[in-house]
Every structure is written in C-alpha cells, then in structure tokens.
Length: 116
Length: 113
Image (cartoon, rainbow over the protein chains, first blue to last red):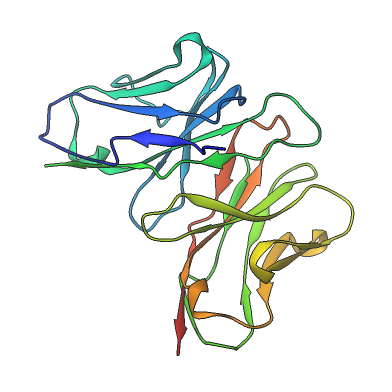
C-alpha cells in the first residue's frame, strides 16, 4: 500500500521562472488536495479535485497558479513567473470520495520550493 | 469562516512527563477536529480525529484528545512523553463538506532527556 508521493522533493529556482510539481495520490482515492505551508505556519488550503474536476480554489491561488488532474489520477501544480513569496512547502493530500462521516486526508511528504 | 488557534508556539517537556497541547477552534456547526504530527522531512500524520460521540478520543502513539464544546477546545494529551515525540503538532478543523482542512499555526514540541 503506497502512500501519496510528490516529486520533486526539493526545487530551487530563480525568480521569474516557471515550476511544476507532481502529486500521485493513493490509487483508490478520488479526491486530491493541494496545501501550502510557509515556514513556521500551518498548512493553508489551495485547491481540491474530485476526480478530474477542480471544485474549489482558495483566494490564495493567484492567476499565476494552475492545477490540473487529467483523467482523475495524478495532479500537477504549476507556478508561473515565480516570486520569492512563493517559497514554501507544497503539500498534496488525497482521500476517498463521498462517505460518512468524513474522509481522512492522507498527506504526501511535500515539495519544498525555494525561489532565489 | 472556520479558524484554529494553537496558543503555544513552542513547548519543552522532560521525557516521561505528561503533555497537553492546546487547541481552540471557531466553527459554526458541529466541527470535525483533527490532530496531525509532522516530523522533519515527513508528511503530516494523523494522530486522532473527532467527528461525534464520545468526547474523549484515543489516537495512535498513546495520544488522546478531549472535545469540549463549551470551551471550543480540542486539547491533545499524552501521559508520558518519549523522546521520539519531538515534532510539530497541528490541530485542524474540517468543513462539513469534507473539502478542506483549516490548520492552526502549530506547536513545536521539544523533549528534554
């Protein structure tokens, strides 16, 4: 039983460059979530997918951010024209779909982004 | 809007001593409450959760938490701390639709030998 995996684990980039992260959820999970965690803070919700449909986006997700989940399997999070403020840990989580009473979210190890 | 406050940023306890980490939440309806632990280089691991029913919930690694609606609290406890418990602990509240978690700022636990 493999957990949630994320690649790369670390990414260093220069300001203005584009970066893309990948998340592979637990295979039978049809919900996938992205969170961002800055140093010394708790994770903050960015967006989530039910299968391939992106159902909710936080106001934290500016126009430079785009997330996709083609075919309802893995997901990618792209940041265009990176800024130093984008430096953070990007966490992915997955869970089963609708089910009572609540579906536990399983987290991956995260991708740490450093923007120079 | 839901929110979570963890008043203690850092806590240091001696190995073998008891532990209580505080968590206060704000949520309009019956909350879904969680405690996660995060060790360096590791993902968030769920310690325990509260949905309904018994207000004292047991989790993994000997942790427990008590839901107190009157105080809007969900404090995490452990009777005897081990050095391996040193980590960052996050309290979180889930929305009714199961779509997102709102986390507190975390409490970093250090364990003295």
